[in-house]
Each structure stands twice: as structure tokens, then as C-alpha cells.
Length: 274
Image (tube, rainbow, N blue to C red; front, side, top):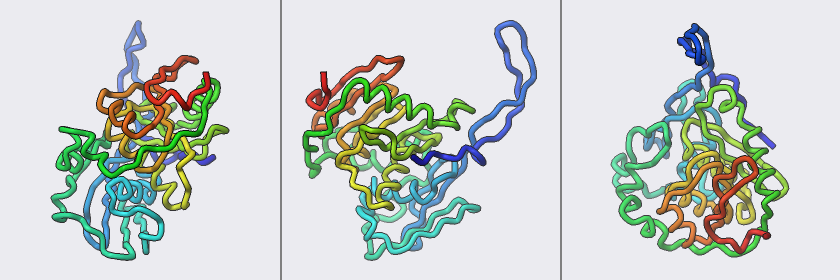
């Protein structure tokens, strides 16, 4: 299993802390926020707020989520400027970028929500419109409560940035036997895109994989997971109503609010072993 290296993503902040009885001065760790610029075929298309690690995965995962690239063969070249926080992607064939820069927002909030681009295409009004053309995922990948608990514990243990700063989200790509890869970032959407980029760059088949996340499961998160063909989401948090609508359409199992050995099964119970 690979995990994010916390080194270089944490800064020190001096502040006054109240411990319940008195105030005291203390330095404490705070997660770094930086801006990644993504270029496709020479043109800048997006700026993403992130921690600054796994830039190639984040850039490619974002492009995959937006439908600009669909597999590794579509990418001719990737160059990463770590110092300048820029990623340059060249595609094998020309790709449609709509009306250019107005397809994407110029900046993304730290939450990672793609509000401008997705909102323009109708997601916020009707999430089912974004699901047109997607196939319902097939059944399979049986899970037990014990497996869900073990995977969530493994995910939480793989989050050094959160342990140090309490300022990040973490997501993991897993099989029933354990985590394959985990990623941390200030944006929960970014963590899913990183995993999508990891899978695309590694030509990894996700049809029998699991997504774990510490964050809330929104409709945008479900769409990203559906795009990856992943049939199961396990979350430390809970879903939104629109997310549940999409989960049912997709045939994705969501086990949420996995905490202290307890959990809620929200959709597609046929995969769970009772």
C-alpha cells in the first residue's frame, strides 16, 4: 500500500490555545494549501486548490472525471513542474474543451467542488441529467460488516496529515482484503480524483474495487466514483439526498457513517452479507 508522505505538506503556525482552564502560546501544525495549474495541449484549463502532492494523479484524475481523457492511451505526454505547481498534459488526439476557458472555472475552492463546470451542465438542478449514458453497475463484490470496519480502520490509520493537522480528507482505493492506495488532500473531491488518476496511469481495472472516504458523499462524489466503475463506497461520513438518488441509479452500494464499529447501509443491500 502507498500512502501520502506528510513531509512538505505541513507548516507551523503560532497561536494562543485555550485548554479549558487557561490560555497559552504554542506552535502547532497546519496543512499547506497551494494552487495547481493544469494545462492541456498548451492551454491552461483549471486551477485547483490542493496540498501539492501527487500532482500528476490529481491533474489526470480531474481530466478523467471531466471526460477529457478516458484511458492511459489517450495521453501522449505528462510533464510535472513541482516547483511551479503546474502539470502539462498532451493528448494523442485533439480533445474537445468546449468553449475553452469558460468551460471551467479559473479557480477551485479548497473543498474541491467543481461548482462552476458541473453547475453549467445541470448537475445542481438535476443530478440525473449527468448520469445519462452511464450503465448501471453489475452485482458482485460481497462485503461483510467486519470487512467494512477493517477497511475504514486501515484508511484512518493511513492519514498522517489529518492526524497531525485535522485539516484534510482522506480517500482510499481498496479490495476486500485491504487498501491498495490512499490519498490525503484539503479537498475531498481531490482525493477521489487522485485515486482516479492513480488507476488510469496504472491501467488498473476498478470494476471490483472499493472507494473509502472520510468525507461527505455528495452527488459530485458519486459521479466521480461511477465514472471509475467502482461498485462500493464506504464513508466515515453520510450522504446527501441527491447522492442517494444517483447511487440507486448507478447500482452502487454505500455504507456510511462507519464509526466505532457501527455503520449505515444506505443503498444496494444485495452486496452485503448479513
